[in-house]
Length: 133
Image (cartoon, rainbow, N blue to C red; front, side, top):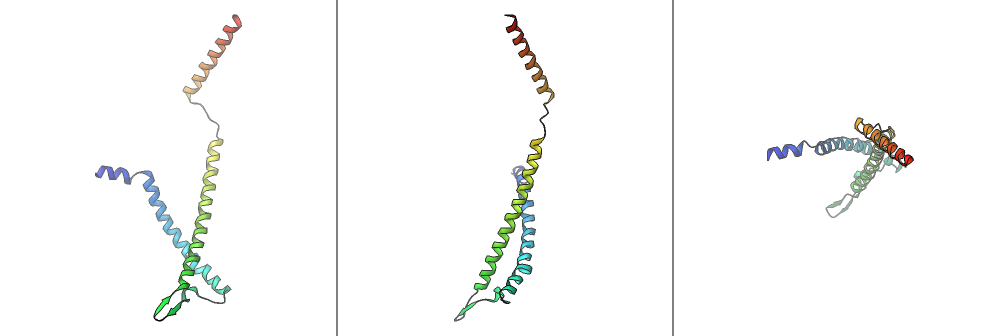
């Protein structure tokens, strides 16, 4: 069972996933800072200094914090747009890399070159035999 777990844990996909989760966590912190420290204060300035986090409706002793909901929705929108552009950039870079790889001329191996030569010789023999007949 230990050997099986070792094979699973050391597969390339699991390691790639782990790296993705770590980078995703760091990226999430960056985007959260962008939202909390830059975007929301700017939105607050535009809206006349309204701090969404403090918006709430109180009924009896129950607080309905709709401002926090608005804040969370804005966070989600900015994070999803950021992730979209990040993935789009990565896809464009990887697509260009594939184009460069595909543009390389295909060089036949020694075996393939030998087989091509044999094929050409056989074709030549067949055409010579047809010319003699």
